[in-house]
Figure (spheres, rainbow, N blue to C red):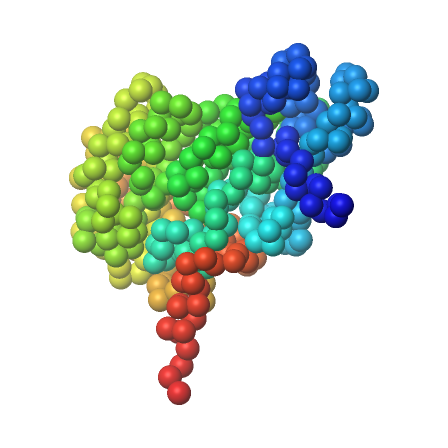
Amino acid sequence: MNSNVSETRKINLMGLHRAALREHFEALGEKPYRADQVVRWIHHAGLDTFESMTNVNRTLRQRLEDTAQIAAPEVVREQVSPDGTRKWMLRLADGNVIETVYIPEPDRGTLCISSQAGCALNCTFCATARQGFSRNLEAHEIIGQVWRAHERLGRTANTAERPITNVVLMGMGEPLLNFDNVVGAMDLMLDDLAYGLSRRRVTLSTAGLVPAMDRLSEICPVSLAVSLHAPDDALRDRLVPLNRKYPIAELLEACRRYVSRESRRRVTFEYVMLKGVNDSEGHARALARLVRDLPAKVNLIPFNPFADSGFERSSQTVIDRFRDILLDAGITTITRRTRGEDIDAACGQLAGRIRDRTRRSDRAAAAAAPLP
C-alpha cells in the first residue's frame, strides 16, 4: 500500500480538542483521562510522535502509531522583518499554501493565523480576496499554525513564559464561514492543558456574519473584532460586499448582543484608512455617531499596499485628524502601527498560494492585463 495513502487515512489528533479526543479514546475502549495526557503531550510539550509519551502505556502508544498521526502544516518559507515580525508560508497536504504571522512587542507576542485557504468575501482592499477561495481549513490546520509557531519560536515548559501571548484570527479567510473548525481550534487555544490562553487574548475578526456572531457568543465568546471600514451602507457595500446581506444597522445590533453577555466585554471595530475613499472628517464624525453607544474601541489601520490594488494609504496627517475626531467624541481609538510591510506580512497583505476554485484570481489578472 502507498504510504501516503495510509497516512491520510489516519486520524490527525492535532485537531481534536479535549472533549473530542475523550470521545475518541472511549471509542477505542480506553479511559477518557488518556485524552488529557495526549493533549498535554501534543500542545503543551510539542510532541508529534507517540513514542515519547512516557505516561501512556506501550500497547496504546503502538495502537496510536498504527491508527493516528500528529501533523501540522509544513513550513516552506520563513521571512523575518527588521522590526522582528516573522511570516511563515505553510504548505497544506493538498498543496495549498497559507500564511501565518508573528508580531513581537515588548509586552506581548501576537500570532495572526488563517482560517481558510483564500477568502470568499471579496473585500476590495484585501490581497487575500484577490487570490480567490479554495476551501476551509480543517481544525488541525488551524491549530497546527499555533503548534508550528511555538516550535519555530521556542517552546517553554511554563505557559506564562511562552513567546505567544495572544492569537488573532485575522489572517487569510473569514473565520465565521468555517465555524466548527475554528471553534474546535479555539477550544485548544483556551485549554489549560494545551495553550492556556484567556478568552480576552484570543480575538476573532469577522466581516460581519450576523447569525454566526450570535452563535459564537453562546458557544465560545472570545474577543470580537469587526471589519467595519465605512460608516454608511453605500460605501461599505463597495468595500465589504457582505454588507449587502448584513447591513450596518443589523451588524451593530449583533455587536450589542455580543457585548451584552458580559459587563466588561467590548467590540473592536477595524477601519482601514483609504486615501480619498473613507478618510474624510465627515466620515470620522459619522463613525463616531455610529458607535458612540457601544462599548467599543476603533483600530485605525493604515492601508498596506499590494499590486494593482487601486487604493492608496491615507496620509499620516489625515489619519491623525480622523483619530482626534473620534477621541474628542469619547471613542477609544488607536492607530495600528504597520508591522512587517517589507515582507508583505501587514494587515490585508497575506496571500499565500491557493488553488482558486472561484477563478477570481484569473478574472482579476485578465482585467489588469493591458489591451492588445
